[in-house]
Amino acid sequence: MLNIIQAESNKKIKYLRSLKQKKVRLRDSTYILEGLKVNLEGIREGADLIEIFMSQSFYENEYEKYPDLAKVRKNIVADKVFNKITDTVNSQGIISTVKADLKNLEDIMPFGRYILVDGLSDPGNLGGIIRAIDAFNFDGLILGPKTVDILNEKVVRSTMASIFRVKAYVMDDLKEMTDLKKKKFRIFSTNLSPASKDPVQVDLKNNIILIIGNEANGVSSEMESFADGMIHIPMEGRAESLNANVSASILMYESQRQRRES
Image 1 (cartoon, rainbow, N blue to C red):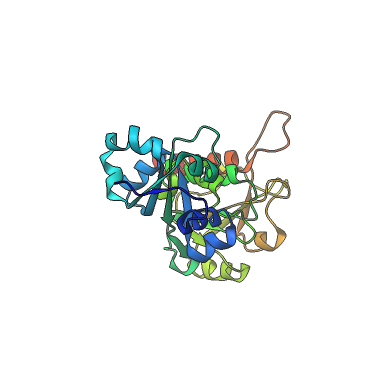
Image 2 (cartoon, helix red, strand yellow):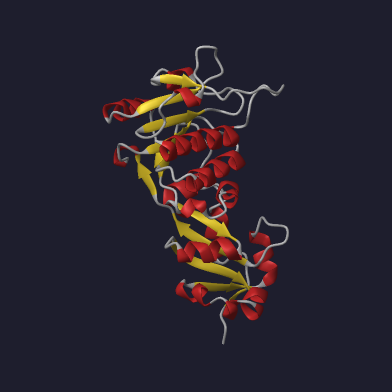
């Protein structure tokens, strides 16, 4: 006989709902993954899925079509309860809890290529940057202070599963930038000032950290003080600036172009 969770007061359901809070996600290094495709990809990529919650309808109609799901401990949830825990309008009926693999900045390996986000606040922008890091084969993401939580559901969803393949390093304090300087990284900050250089004039092939700032205010002056140089993306149209995701993507493409043509 199936054991179906019938009440919102069930302790597992209460914990799942508590993961909507940033403090709980960070405390437990655990986040929520919603959707069939992304859960299947998480399993195939070796992500640390703790357990899966599926609606009774999904279990009865879809579960057996996807044998990989059997690799993770499952919970079957009555539809009326499941509908209370999903944020998706047309949910596919599957949610999992996943153990995050966030790394300390001291673990970062030199000679690679990294994006550092400084105070980025939009989940979609961060998710898009993570996808671009995956696409352009950068070595990882550095999360600067006051940046949106990478375990936020909107961030995770917008990465389209790239979160499983991108190493993320958490910076707790600006003082840690000194450690990056000791590892001989060349650090470049995006900046629209006349003194900044076109990326094609700068060697971006290796051992670099590219700083992407807040959507409204750019890179903070404190963070910028650690940069070895300033770069900007030339624009001929009338728009004043590009969003963070687009800027990061263009810079990573330029780095890839330089490596390919060297």
